[in-house]
Image (tube, rainbow, N blue to C red; front, top):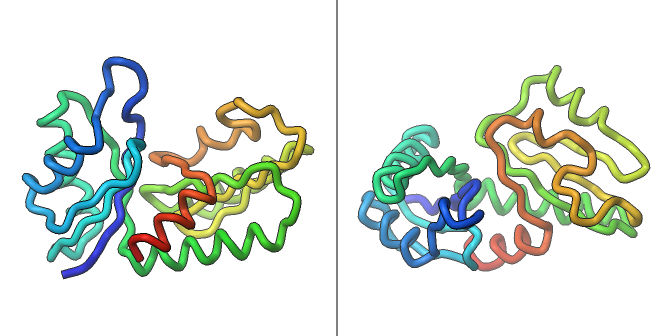
Length: 178
Protein backbone atom coordinates (compact mmCIF):
# COMPACT_ATOMS: atom_id res chain seq x y z
CA UNK A 1 0.00 0.00 0.00
CA UNK A 2 1.35 3.41 -0.97
CA UNK A 3 0.76 6.81 0.58
CA UNK A 4 -0.46 9.60 -1.70
CA UNK A 5 -1.22 13.27 -1.28
CA UNK A 6 -4.13 14.86 -3.10
CA UNK A 7 -4.86 18.48 -3.85
CA UNK A 8 -8.38 19.57 -4.66
CA UNK A 9 -9.00 22.47 -7.01
CA UNK A 10 -11.71 25.11 -6.74
CA UNK A 11 -13.46 24.11 -3.54
CA UNK A 12 -14.82 26.31 -0.74
CA UNK A 13 -15.16 29.23 -3.13
CA UNK A 14 -18.46 30.90 -2.44
CA UNK A 15 -21.68 29.22 -1.42
CA UNK A 16 -21.98 26.74 -4.30
CA UNK A 17 -18.68 24.83 -4.08
CA UNK A 18 -18.57 24.06 -0.36
CA UNK A 19 -16.69 20.89 0.62
CA UNK A 20 -15.65 20.89 4.31
CA UNK A 21 -12.62 18.83 5.28
CA UNK A 22 -14.65 16.33 7.34
CA UNK A 23 -16.77 15.62 4.27
CA UNK A 24 -13.64 15.30 2.12
CA UNK A 25 -12.29 12.71 4.54
CA UNK A 26 -15.61 10.81 4.69
CA UNK A 27 -16.09 10.67 0.90
CA UNK A 28 -12.47 9.65 0.32
CA UNK A 29 -12.89 6.78 2.79
CA UNK A 30 -16.20 5.71 1.22
CA UNK A 31 -14.39 5.62 -2.15
CA UNK A 32 -12.12 2.92 -0.70
CA UNK A 33 -9.04 4.87 0.36
CA UNK A 34 -7.49 4.25 3.78
CA UNK A 35 -5.80 6.24 6.54
CA UNK A 36 -7.30 9.46 5.17
CA UNK A 37 -6.23 12.75 6.73
CA UNK A 38 -6.92 16.36 5.81
CA UNK A 39 -4.96 19.55 6.42
CA UNK A 40 -6.82 22.83 6.86
CA UNK A 41 -9.96 23.45 4.85
CA UNK A 42 -8.39 24.12 1.46
CA UNK A 43 -8.42 20.69 -0.13
CA UNK A 44 -5.28 18.89 1.03
CA UNK A 45 -5.64 15.15 1.66
CA UNK A 46 -3.38 12.24 2.51
CA UNK A 47 -4.46 8.65 1.92
CA UNK A 48 -3.21 5.13 1.37
CA UNK A 49 -4.22 2.96 -1.58
CA UNK A 50 -3.29 -0.25 -3.33
CA UNK A 51 -4.01 1.39 -6.69
CA UNK A 52 -0.89 2.23 -8.66
CA UNK A 53 -1.99 4.27 -11.65
CA UNK A 54 -2.28 7.96 -10.86
CA UNK A 55 -5.01 8.48 -13.47
CA UNK A 56 -7.07 5.67 -11.95
CA UNK A 57 -6.64 7.09 -8.43
CA UNK A 58 -7.62 10.60 -9.52
CA UNK A 59 -10.60 9.31 -11.50
CA UNK A 60 -11.92 7.28 -8.53
CA UNK A 61 -11.62 10.25 -6.19
CA UNK A 62 -13.14 12.73 -8.66
CA UNK A 63 -16.06 10.41 -9.39
CA UNK A 64 -16.78 10.01 -5.65
CA UNK A 65 -16.54 13.74 -4.99
CA UNK A 66 -18.84 14.62 -7.90
CA UNK A 67 -21.41 12.07 -6.74
CA UNK A 68 -21.36 13.46 -3.21
CA UNK A 69 -21.16 17.18 -3.99
CA UNK A 70 -22.98 17.51 -7.29
CA UNK A 71 -20.07 19.38 -8.91
CA UNK A 72 -16.71 18.41 -10.35
CA UNK A 73 -13.70 18.57 -8.04
CA UNK A 74 -10.50 18.30 -10.09
CA UNK A 75 -7.94 16.42 -8.01
CA UNK A 76 -4.17 16.29 -8.47
CA UNK A 77 -2.27 13.51 -6.69
CA UNK A 78 1.36 12.69 -5.95
CA UNK A 79 2.91 9.69 -4.23
CA UNK A 80 4.39 10.77 -0.89
CA UNK A 81 7.95 10.28 -2.17
CA UNK A 82 7.22 12.40 -5.26
CA UNK A 83 5.79 15.16 -3.11
CA UNK A 84 8.73 15.03 -0.69
CA UNK A 85 11.10 15.53 -3.64
CA UNK A 86 8.92 18.35 -5.00
CA UNK A 87 8.96 20.08 -1.58
CA UNK A 88 12.74 19.72 -1.26
CA UNK A 89 13.18 21.18 -4.73
CA UNK A 90 10.83 24.08 -3.87
CA UNK A 91 12.79 24.82 -0.69
CA UNK A 92 16.10 24.77 -2.58
CA UNK A 93 14.67 27.03 -5.28
CA UNK A 94 13.48 29.48 -2.65
CA UNK A 95 16.91 29.43 -0.96
CA UNK A 96 18.54 30.16 -4.34
CA UNK A 97 16.29 33.22 -4.73
CA UNK A 98 16.53 35.20 -1.48
CA UNK A 99 14.26 38.16 -0.92
CA UNK A 100 11.13 36.76 -2.58
CA UNK A 101 7.86 38.31 -1.50
CA UNK A 102 5.97 35.08 -2.26
CA UNK A 103 6.68 31.62 -3.63
CA UNK A 104 3.66 29.74 -4.95
CA UNK A 105 3.87 26.18 -6.22
CA UNK A 106 1.34 25.26 -8.90
CA UNK A 107 0.63 21.52 -8.76
CA UNK A 108 -0.27 20.15 -12.19
CA UNK A 109 -2.43 17.21 -13.16
CA UNK A 110 -0.26 16.69 -16.24
CA UNK A 111 3.29 17.73 -17.07
CA UNK A 112 3.52 20.53 -19.63
CA UNK A 113 4.90 19.90 -23.09
CA UNK A 114 8.18 21.62 -24.03
CA UNK A 115 6.50 24.43 -26.00
CA UNK A 116 4.08 25.31 -23.19
CA UNK A 117 6.91 25.13 -20.63
CA UNK A 118 8.84 27.70 -22.66
CA UNK A 119 5.79 29.97 -22.86
CA UNK A 120 5.27 29.75 -19.09
CA UNK A 121 8.91 30.48 -18.29
CA UNK A 122 8.88 33.41 -20.73
CA UNK A 123 6.36 35.20 -18.47
CA UNK A 124 9.22 36.87 -16.59
CA UNK A 125 8.55 40.48 -15.54
CA UNK A 126 9.69 42.82 -12.78
CA UNK A 127 7.00 41.16 -10.66
CA UNK A 128 8.75 37.78 -10.82
CA UNK A 129 9.23 34.67 -12.88
CA UNK A 130 7.89 31.17 -13.41
CA UNK A 131 10.02 28.03 -13.29
CA UNK A 132 8.71 24.70 -14.60
CA UNK A 133 9.86 21.53 -12.84
CA UNK A 134 7.91 18.47 -13.94
CA UNK A 135 4.37 18.62 -12.53
CA UNK A 136 5.26 21.65 -10.39
CA UNK A 137 5.50 25.22 -11.60
CA UNK A 138 7.00 27.79 -9.26
CA UNK A 139 5.84 31.42 -9.21
CA UNK A 140 8.73 33.36 -7.67
CA UNK A 141 7.28 36.78 -6.90
CA UNK A 142 9.40 39.79 -6.07
CA UNK A 143 8.62 42.55 -3.58
CA UNK A 144 6.30 45.04 -5.21
CA UNK A 145 4.25 42.53 -7.19
CA UNK A 146 0.55 43.29 -6.93
CA UNK A 147 -0.45 41.46 -3.75
CA UNK A 148 -3.95 40.05 -4.08
CA UNK A 149 -3.70 39.59 -7.83
CA UNK A 150 -4.46 35.94 -8.48
CA UNK A 151 -2.07 35.50 -11.41
CA UNK A 152 0.37 38.44 -11.48
CA UNK A 153 2.48 36.88 -14.25
CA UNK A 154 -0.43 35.81 -16.43
CA UNK A 155 0.77 32.22 -16.66
CA UNK A 156 -1.87 30.21 -14.77
CA UNK A 157 -4.12 29.94 -17.82
CA UNK A 158 -1.34 28.03 -19.59
CA UNK A 159 -1.01 25.31 -16.94
CA UNK A 160 -4.05 23.15 -17.65
CA UNK A 161 -5.67 21.56 -14.59
CA UNK A 162 -3.68 22.92 -11.66
CA UNK A 163 -4.00 24.27 -8.14
CA UNK A 164 -1.47 26.20 -6.12
CA UNK A 165 -0.17 26.22 -2.57
CA UNK A 166 2.31 28.60 -1.02
CA UNK A 167 5.75 27.33 -0.06
CA UNK A 168 4.85 27.24 3.64
CA UNK A 169 1.96 24.83 3.01
CA UNK A 170 4.11 22.68 0.69
CA UNK A 171 6.82 22.41 3.35
CA UNK A 172 4.31 21.73 6.11
CA UNK A 173 2.60 18.93 4.18
CA UNK A 174 5.90 17.30 3.26
CA UNK A 175 7.05 17.36 6.90
CA UNK A 176 3.68 16.13 8.17
CA UNK A 177 2.84 13.46 5.60
CA UNK A 178 5.96 12.33 3.71
